[in-house]
Every structure is written in C-alpha cells, then in structure tokens.
Length: 400
Ligand SMILES: Cc1cc2nc3c(=O)[nH]c(=O)nc-3n(C[C@H](O)[C@H](O)[C@H](O)COP(=O)(O)OP(=O)(O)OC[C@H]3O[C@@H](n4cnc5c(N)ncnc54)[C@H](O)[C@@H]3O)c2cc1C
Image (cartoon, rainbow, N blue to C red):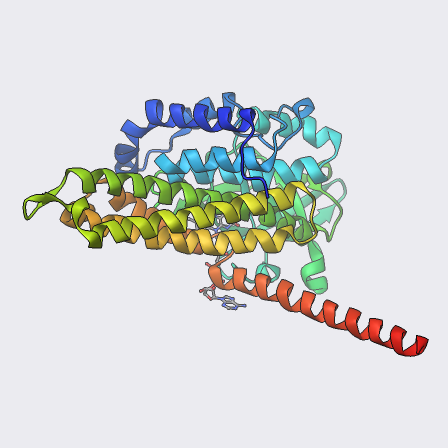
C-alpha cells in the first residue's frame, strides 16, 4: 500500500493546520468555557472548501477524495474537536447523502449552499427512546396531498439551532419496521419546527447538541429525499461515511494531546530533571505515538476503501472508528497523567481534550455497535468462504 500523500493532499493538510493554529487555537479554551459556537471560524473553513469536500465542483463542492477529507478533519480536531464534529456532520451525513440521493432541484436548493459553507447541516435520527436501535424511532410523517405532516422528537442533534437544513428520518409506514422509514429535508423556518433545548454536555461544549420537536411540521413532498421506505438505508449508508470522519476526529484529538504532553514533558522539571527524562514518561509518549499512527493508518485504509467503492467499506470504517475512538481516550488519559495536577486544571488544553474524547466511542454508533458490524462482516465472509469451499468441493466431487 502506498502511504505517501499527493502534493494537493499535503497542501490541504498544511493550509488547514495553519488556519487552525493562527486563527482558532487561542480562542478554543474560552469558547469551551463560554459554550460559544465557533460559527465564524467554521464559515471561514467553509470558504476554504471544508464543508463540501466530497461534493463535485459542479455542485459547489471541492470535489476531493476521502483522504483529503480525513486530513482536513484531523487538522481541525487537533486544535478543536467541537469544530471537527460540526464539519464532519455537514460533510459526511448531510451533504454527501444529499448529493447521492437528492434530485437536481434538491441539490440546487440545499447542496450548493451546504458545500460552499453558507449553511450547516444537521442529521436527525436519534430519539429519546431510540439510539443504537434506529429502526425503533417513533417520529411519524403522514402524507396529506402534496405535503407530509411530521410529528416527533429528535435528540442530540449536532449543529441543532445552527443549521440551514435538517435531514430528518420518520416513519411513513409504522407497520413496515425498518423499511417504513423515510428521509426528509426540513428547513428551520417550516411551521412546527422548534429547538426545544440544548444538552448540557461533559465535553464538546462549544458544539451544539439540540433536542428538536416537530409538531405538525409541514414538509412539502418535494423535500422527501429518495423514495418512501428508503430512509434507514440512506441513514446507515451515510453513517458508514460518517464513521471515517469521526475516526479522523479521534486521530486529530489524540495528536493534539500528544503534542501538548510532549511539549510539557520537555519543560516541566522534577527531581532535578525534565519529566521527559524519566523512562516512565517516555514510555507513555512512545505508546501514545504508536497508537496514533496505527489508528491513522486504519483511517486512511477506510478512506481508500470508500473511494474505491468497496462493498466492505462500511466494515473498514467501523474498524477505524472503533480503534481510533478508544485509542483517543487512552491517549487523552495519558496526556492528563503527564501533566499531573496541571492536566486536571481548566487552564490546560488536555483537560478539555480528555472530556471531548469521551463521546468518540458513543456517537455515530457506540463501540459495541461497531463490534457488531465488524463481527457480522467477519463471520459473513467466513460463511461465504465456507459455502464457496463446499460448492467448490461438490463441483470437484461431481467431476470425479
Ligand atoms: C455529543 C453527541 C452528539 C450526537 N449527535 C447526533 C446527531 O447529530 N444526530 C443523531 O441522530 N444522533 C446523535 N447523537 C446520538 C448518538 O448517535 C447516540 O447516542 C448513539 O447512537 C447511542 O445511542 P443511545 O445514546 O440511545 O444509547 P443506547 O442505544 O441506549 O445504548 C446504551 C448502551 O447499550 C449498548 N447497546 C445497545 N444496543 C446494543 C447491542 N445490540 N449490542 C451490544 N450493546 C448494545 C450501547 O453500546 C451502549 O453501551 C449524538 C450523541 C452525542 C452524545
């Protein structure tokens, strides 16, 4: 496998890194404390093409590959994981499925503005009683003439209250289970749309996580994305891509924590030496770096599988997400440990990173759900190989 980046990929990584270091880094701690949404900074990244990286240029996007996309997210998350999740949701689970499943009118109306960073997107699948078990959602969309009447409550909506378009999943046929779910594009100005509250979170405090209530919300028929009953398939396909983005977010966060810890280890002194001279600290740093590199390679592999259109791209995304999200928690833990009491202070960046890391193994599918997907792929392939072997043997036996 070729691990080298192209000149364009290196340029994207370096430009985003420069922007994050120069324009964002100095504000991140304050924004976290004040729960200030970094809207202006995200808009500037949008102008650089970071909101529609995977969308073709004819629809306002940057038309880039998934490696470029994960490099961008890693650099953003290295400084601010809250900004990274806003970009990941807009790119992976709103703009991309809209490009893939939307018609030209929907692309004209929403995709171009999303891809240019003029509006953000939100993905509304989770409900108070249904997270991992997405088929158990209860939101209902009932057709009446040329509109659908949408009722239900969506929770933990990233970018909720800050988005120009909400990608909402609701049941149009409750008797059909997972095949009765349909996707809609909802504008916040539609009647019956209301942000009912914002979550008070452990981490990612400058990102928005809203509860949204749809009360007889009127959605025009032309805002249905795909056919009735295709919603869950569209959602799960989008989440396959989303997981590559969250894995990149995890790698970026961990890289930021490692850099902070290495720099602290070189200047903090104890027993007449810098703490970086103690082997115990060196070993922590060595393990952190090794795990980050392993996760980064899984992310790049998942990105390549996606660009190659592999049928197994979803399982590779789950592997990257599982390992990278749990790795980021281990790395953030060690970064706090190396900082000692300073790591427990709100004056350090690693304290925020430690809190921000915790959600990585929960959202866009918990670690347990990733393991379910990975095991299903593994055992499914084993079954397939066995049945091919059996089929091969019976052919051989028949020939004999
Ligand atoms: C900060 C944040 C942002 C989010 N953003 C969004 C968003 O933008 N849009 C959106 O739709 N959702 C969003 N979510 C919701 C998120 O995707 C869900 O929280 C997640 O899918 C888990 O669902 P749950 O919280 O209901 O947990 P549950 O499904 O109730 O799971 C609870 C526990 O049971 C385990 N479990 C459940 N089923 C199984 C199983 N089959 N096998 C083994 N273990 C199992 C889980 O792994 C977990 O440990 C966000 C969540 C957070 C915290």
